[in-house]
Length: 272
Image (tube, rainbow, N blue to C red; front, side, top):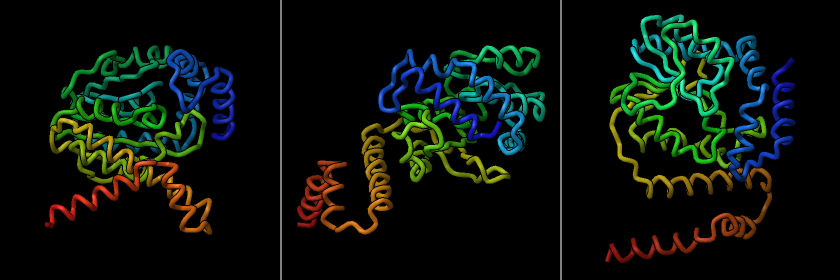
């Protein structure tokens, strides 16, 4: 089976449950993420050289931190946790997943320093890893804030996201983060340290404990979303007129020009 074959099967199951990327239906999503296809996905990841290699690089990056407590956020099948355990047998690895797979739980039972948990506590981990999770949720910012809260000040986060339409359960409402995710992380107290050895996942350090400014975050989110839409629109309509481009901005964000005018007016008032 190729990765494309697996994605095609997942898309068929997604559609068979009537899942809608624009609307979160808890029951339908739970059915989808509880389907045996995710067991097949876990087995595939362990056999697929590139996928496994990415997880080995994440495990190695965490080993270099010397962390004693690690949270695998959305760890699912437990592949990454087991790799980390092999490199860090003295560390405790907790797996949190909204849809914990039965097989993953059973496989990890024999490994003493791995456990599935239901409610990780704030600021109780030296490190956190999150791989291929945020593109599956309708409000990634809420989950990102929650993730960061679990890590102690000075701790490490190793994150990989796929904000790209490879599969139907990658939600289009998240795709704008492909350009701005690091900026959101900075607003939430993280600094970029670097990349894993295969240049796949990003390594962050929690440099400050920030109380989220949701007004600022949502405003920047709206700007990020608009910028992404404009970028996509330009790619499709590279020869479009300036007027059509401005009309598209108005369609995507009706208050864009009124807000721009008000901002310029306030700047002028302040200068006076």
